[in-house]
Amino acid sequence: MEGVFVSNFIDPVKARAKFPERVYVLDTTLRDGEQTPGVCFTLEEKIEIAKRLDELGVDVIEAGFPVNSEEECNTVKTIKREGLKAKVCGLARCVINDIDACIKSEVDRVHIFIATSDIHLKYKLRMDEERALTQALAATEYVKDHGLECEFSCEDATRTPIERLVRFYGSVEERGADVHNVPDTVGVMEPEAMFDLISRLKALLRKPISMHCHNDFGLATANTLAGVKAGASQIHVTVNGLGERAGNASLEQTVTALTAMYGVRTGIKLSLLKEVSKVVERSSMIPLPPNFPIVGNNAFAHEAGIHVHGVLAKAESYEPLTPEMVGQKRRIVMGKHTGKHGVANFVKEKYNLTEEQIAAVVERVRTLAIRKKKITEDDVNAVVDGILGSVPDQEKLLRLDEILVVTGNKITPTASVQLIHNSQRRVAAGIGTGPVDALSKAIQSALGEEIRLLNYKLEAISGGTDSLCTVEVMTEDREGRTAMGLAVGGDIVMASANALMESLNRIYSKREKDCQQNKQIK
Ligand code: KIV
Ligand code: ZN
Image (cartoon, rainbow, N blue to C red; front, side):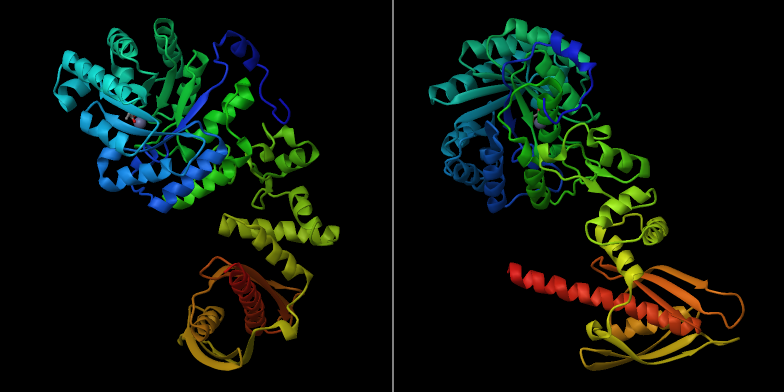
């Protein structure tokens, strides 16, 4: 497959697998995904997510558990009435009331479930196998009598004896169930065991088999793939792997692996994956870990010097897929391991730097990375700006008009400053552990905001007490804007004040630009 650079060792596995022609994707972000602790989507968010899933190409959207509340029932109905291409499914226990709520919400498919493991039958349902089977059969018939598709799940299937699974799935099939879903409810399977289980079920059942895997041991994606290798033709997945406890199999990982590793067809447009992931991240308010496969911000980011060199020479050296394939972009990240190639690549499009200047940028980015851990492109721009020159006078939004710093033996270092900001004079004083600290506190107090000093470097240019010195600072405001300031002078305190003011001027001008951009967006 073009743009995919996976292992040759997969070929014999592919030859042995019993892949279906096509895999159907049932997305349960709006149901199991919403069961993630702390997640609660609004109606608008659910509609937006459903539309995005539809555009993405999922076959079925499990939109909720309608019996939960009148509101949930209406939400599922509203999604159904959006006229999406995807089928809309509602969850129901094997109880008439639950199924009626699904019918009321106008779904295409009802996903009925009943627990079948000893633990669940005894402690949760407090019923025996016979009664559970009777309920399952009655529920299947009720769904089919209403002309709806019926998907049936033995909850906790993977801790249920195989004979019981065959009995339940075989019997509901006789009553018209359309899909057999096999939930690994507490994520206790591993791939080989899942392959065996699905192979055995597949040999005995006629209707399509579906996978529903939880991630308690981090194996949800692997187990889902193992089930598909054994012939399962539907997968339950969630965007960003949301779901109960450790979550469900992630849509992004499972579908990309199916496509790129095994060449199995799904209806998913992979290039929309990142976008959909961002929408769900925003609405769920569950931040995606940067190292999340496929859609995480670091999934196609390269920092280490050797890696960047390799990626720039031939991207597939360190990328198993092209980032564009899944809607991502390659990012060259600056940091502690940043080599010349990474910086040069990043700045060459924007700046015309000499070899010497590049070396200076690399060194400063590395120093900064030790303190700041995460270096953004803005930080690197700030470093380059600092190296290329100071802010022109006419662009300065802040001016230091007066400054007095007192230090000595047995007195607390104290500074007072007068700043001009937007033609307004601001006067303040501060004390600190040393004169520069006192000065920084006085400036912050005059501005009425906290500014973090990320880096402060003082260097004497020549030897001797009358030596000129350079002061380099990196500051950061509350919203994370960073800027560098550089000053040269014979007086350490004045050079520090000027470097601080230069970096603050940069932060203030970035802030103005951000404000203007925000106004334009509104
Ligand atoms: O994990 C599970 O068992 C479920 C069922 C409702 C199918 O989500
Ligand atoms: Zn589940």
